[in-house]
Image (cartoon, rainbow, N blue to C red; front, side, top):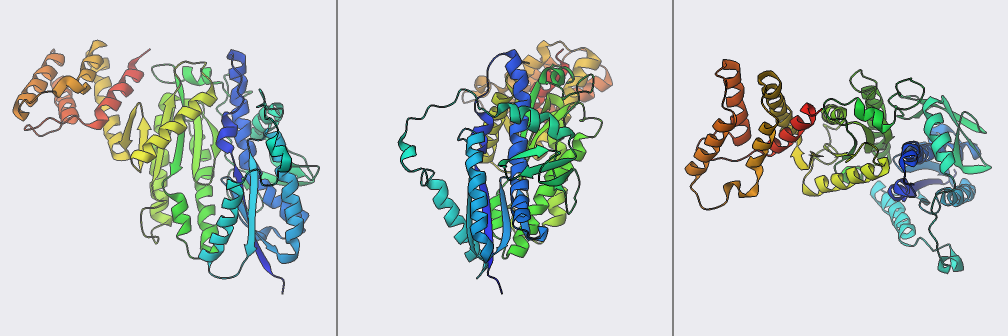
Length: 485
């Protein structure tokens, strides 16, 4: 009986690659949208195509593919095929480095499928870690040559045209041994279908793009900004499962590891594609990528907030249904972050980077939360902010409150509002008096009802102590964006 080998591959440097080499200028910024989407699609498809192409070139069955996507893959090989697999991956790794101008690396590890899964996983990860920490191990004397960073990646046209626009319309994706690091829409020695739903022979990929006004191409960011409610602005939403790696490390066998990783990938690719096709989203958001445990989209600012809430709701239901037998909260919550562009023609890559930084802040401060409009909120507080935003906008639209109204409410969040050693009752009295002054006016019953609700939601229902709620500032900023023309 042939010895069984587990081979794990991993792609490094994707975040740096997505942000590298973007040119300045308005026309360059417009092209940068296709470039960023194309690079991210290349990374996503590379993780899917390489293991499938490896098995096809070795004449092995598709069932030996364990998992793929999210920047890594796992395959099962017979022992005698390991040498050919190493040759295949070496050629692919060399061209990956060339296409990305050194930003992206492919590394892999292999070990016998013997012993407990925890031991096997440790052997695989130790070999990967050794290669990750020694990037110049195979470079030899070339590692000491003077390095000049390229001003623009030589393969940018391939990423922007082939992997950007064409992949969105393609029904199949191909691979050929002459270019082992390239995936080509529609042609190649080996081809696979691209699907938006689960298929045993296809590659599940999310690639929705909001159509332009003429419906011929993907809408640029300035068009997405115009489609927003209130202020014409756009942004980037990024999400990441909390402690996903820890959840995978706690499984006890490869039979448990593979279905679990595939389950997450199917959720993000499938659900995000379906959500983006709904009437409230399909003209307002475009997908940048979907990974094994994370995703990124860009679009109209108001659609991003609504999309974040819907993804979180669906993810909560998904984990309740599929992970109820797994103890602990790891892998069962998701954190997200939104970054808004400071101006319409701001580079997409820069806003994407800001969203990533905001996501790191959110995950460092807490779990199961969102970074939105400068604040980190738990998901339950985001629902409070949405309700409070609706109350404020009703006061502005239905009762013609002035624009100064929002700025007066924001003044409550200044640090010096409660400075000093005043008693709690005195602070409460001062806040109530200021609220009464700001919200003075009509005696209309509906107005008074909204006024009372606004005060209780912002400062709490207890009269003994005033404590401004964290959702309040987000709600006021949210209302300002909605009412601004």
